Length: 352
Ligand SMILES: CC(C)=CCC/C(C)=C(\C)COP(=O)(O)OP(=O)(O)O
Ligand SMILES: [Mg+2]
Image (cartoon, rainbow, N blue to C red; front, top):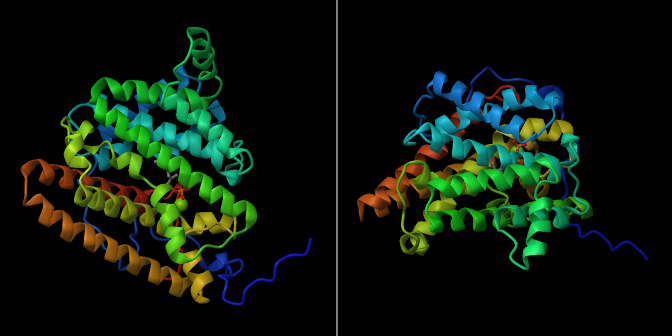
């Protein structure tokens, strides 16, 4: 079988970046020109307490080997959730957010990410993810088969972490809030599958296609819990409205592009073909990575601007919507702060 000819207009990756130019940045530096709002500072004692409890939880379920403890500490899960949920009504509510965040990362690292060296691979990912989805969305059948399923859910750290994190979340969330996150995690899994499929066939998407994939492979499950963690519910009928869905998606997309900007150097250092927004822009526009990076910042800023403007208009219509929009904005700010200051995990390119 002959290889189909490559269209001269097909996006082409720019080739390995010169990572000598992409060394470390000053600690805590934000991407120059990035539109963001300062986060409510994290109380270090609260963050440390969440980390301590999360590590104990992870150990009790044997979620990952001892040798990954350094990475767990470097990830700063406790600081992340304290920054992202400044209105959390209790430590238990922060713990629920922390368990979900930890579980989402265990699944991503162990099932999806090949470069992490923790078992993740594009091949066979669909089968692993459908079983992972059932850790959130229980199997119903005969008692015998349900028992087999229950035992199956104990098979590995990713399944145990999803199963137990969601079980604990259900205790403090309403049924519709729990159902919401189950659906948002299914969307996330669809995004993981698209990313894996493109990587297997070395497909370089158009910029809009990449952003569609990234709207699914997205922080949305984390923002989907902002009302529950703050101790109230945005009712399902309101949440389902298209204008609420839009501000939710804009906030989630802004925050996920922030990840692309801060993780750009880490990702290209481990895999020069890894897709992130600057890389996809460079491939489509046949420009250098610095120009592409600046264009990605501009796209992010326009999405942030739309989120801020549209959520302000909606907030004026009801105090409950205003509270929800504030919760989204707080998550966006806290997540930006976490990315900008997590020098264990992220380094900016030294373009500036
Ligand atoms: C916490 C959560 C819901 C994660 C799911 C999606 C995800 C892993 C991200 C949005 C982060 O993106 P990425 O895979 O690029 O992660 P790193 O850049 O390696 O931190
Ligand atoms: Mg990334």
